[in-house]
Image (cartoon, rainbow, N blue to C red):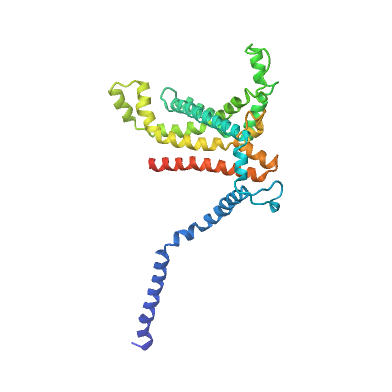
Length: 315
């Protein structure tokens, strides 16, 4: 055996040992998961944390037109917003708009979901109804707003039908009358939002074991008793999660209101979203708009915390 041959294992062994040690150290590092998450965290920081921080900072400033000329005023803008009667009217309208929408979404969604899940209809008819029922969810908000503005126009088809069939002697200003504007946009939001509940509840219904219904029938439960004692308890986690999510999304609805009524007439459909928008881009009071946005953010965070707790309890 030559001297070079005798030295080869001695040189090869330590080199391999060091390589394994480096790989093992990288895999066991507590910073390794954060290294993989760092691109996403940086994007979220830039796109979410920084704008939110800037809005919170602007809410403590007094900037009417330009930010560089602002000065620190503390909680003055919050007092201005919370002392504005329009803000509280917008809050009331938002609560009514969101609350009624969520309840109607659930009622319509559970009714259609149970219809599509029943054995009364043939598979072909169920497939046709699924397509029809989900159609409102496929349209964008802009399409929905333009469609209903045309239908509810004083010279539109809705007024034509109610005058033709003698329901009313004259056409109704659906979106221009303060007594009908809020119910109408609530109806439009219900129409375009119920498929979200329907699809989710239909998936939940298909996951309920049929043995539970068979056991209920053996115990003498009728259809209504099966619904309240089997269906609703099994769907309870889905219903609560969907209701909280839907309420959060509905309170932040802006495009539908802005493209149909613009918050009018006479603040009849003013929402927190349109109120904040007008403060910023109509009154050019960016600080007050920021304060209003922060208030809305706090309310949304409360709802988000409730949703997270509900999800944890469900898990």
